[in-house]
Amino acid sequence: MAKLYGNNAHNGNAQLKREYDEKASAAKRRMRIGIVISVTGFILYVQSMYLYGNMFVLGIPMFLLGNIIAVFSSMKYEKYKGKADALNIGIQGEEVITSTLTSLPDEYMIFNNVALNYNGQLTEIDCIVLSCFGIWVVEVKSYKGVIHGLASNDMWSRIKTSKSGKEYDSEIKNPLKQVERQVQILSNVLYRKGIRTTAKGYVVFPVAENVNVDSDKVLLNSSQLKREILSYNQVVLPKDRVETIRDVLTQL
Image (tube, rainbow, N blue to C red):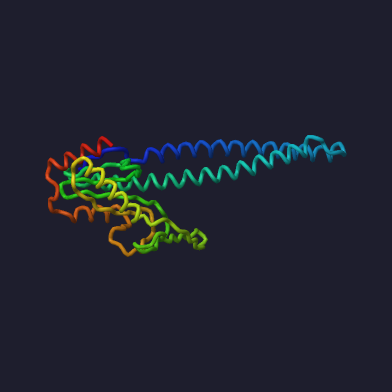
């Protein structure tokens, strides 16, 4: 079993998700309060009209105020809940990848959420796999739907289908260019430590329905990633070099 360094889930995303969950819960409470105020105002208005023949002065303002509170709180609830759900999908995608990669043989090491800084170039790599057979940089993209694109394009297309069968088309940045940049930054960081080597970069879409991209560096699930890593079976890094790289990565 591969040794894991770092956390299973992205700490920043997990913390942010908790914050959005709390904001969504607060908005939902305000929405319910608004509904209560609105209903109370309406009841007072009806009672004053039918029992006393005049409009109760406080009834209409309470009804309007309650509606305003409920509507705006509902909008905030949907906003925060949507962000929390999107982050949760991302966390789950990373956890699936980590779970699969930790089943690699003992000579492999998994580093999650590695922050790198080289000459002002900042990046955070979702996962780095290290062994005597090489180094792999893995970028996890938890997009649903069908992904289309060319390796040379700056933007890719993502098509999602709703439960009613309606298709929605949106664009995402080409993650291959992102992982290529991460590979270069990692190589530069290691070179500064006296280690001349390079890494192989992969992008994985663990929750997508399908991926149509002209690159064998783009994979659909964690099983494909594991098979790809295991396909490299020639030793390219001596044991002492692997240990040095491990020490560098654990100190970042």
